[in-house]
Structures are given as C-alpha cells and as structure tokens.
Image 1 (cartoon, rainbow, N blue to C red):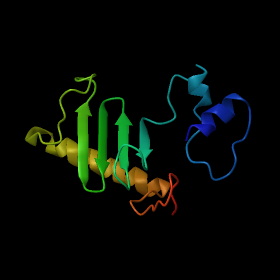
Image 2 (image 1 turned 135 degrees about the horizontal axis):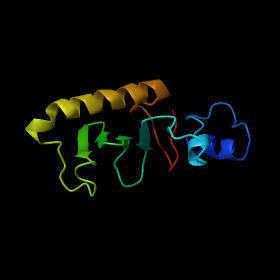
Image 3 (image 1 turned 60 degrees about the vertical axis):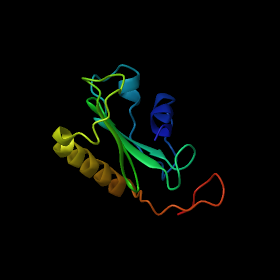
Length: 125
C-alpha cells in the first residue's frame, strides 16, 4: 500500500498487483482531500499470535481484532492517547459492530482472510 504514493511522487507507475491508491497529490500538498478516509493495517506475524491482527484506522476511530475477536476500539478524537479501550463498554456496542463490519468489508475488498499460513517469517496463501 505504501508503494503507490511513493511511485506517484517519483512520477513512476507502480508494478501491477500492488494494493492501495496513489495518494501522492495529497502527500505533496496538491490536493486537500486524502484519497481514502480510512486505512487497513495488517500484522500477519510478529508480536501477535498467528494469523495476526487486522486493524481499521479512520480520522475518528482506531479498531483492531484477531481471528478470535476484537482487541481494541478507541475514539481517537476524544481519546488521542488511546487510554480507554471500548471493546467491553456496553455503550459502544453499535460502534464496535460498525467498525467490525467496515474492517470485514475492507478485508474482503483486498482479498485478505484469516487463512494465511506461515512456515517462516513470510506468509503463504
């Protein structure tokens, strides 16, 4: 996802098969509007047990989950240091459901699933 903006800034066409959008105009200050209002983050391995964690970040919210369920939900406009995790907050159930649905939609759009397999630090589909 990070290759597209940098290729655009260099005036290059990224290789086919690269996910993401060209946000070079936004990065360069030539557009006041970002190409998307959200970011999908994927941690396939590392500090999280396999198959990792997926997250959705918007201007207002930060949400992440593992295959087993939600990990955290923050309203970053009200809690910029992400101190109060709302996953267990009954007043945030509708927001939690909405963020989970949005994350699932993004995962489907990008062909992501929880089906990755790893035998090394890399993953295989």
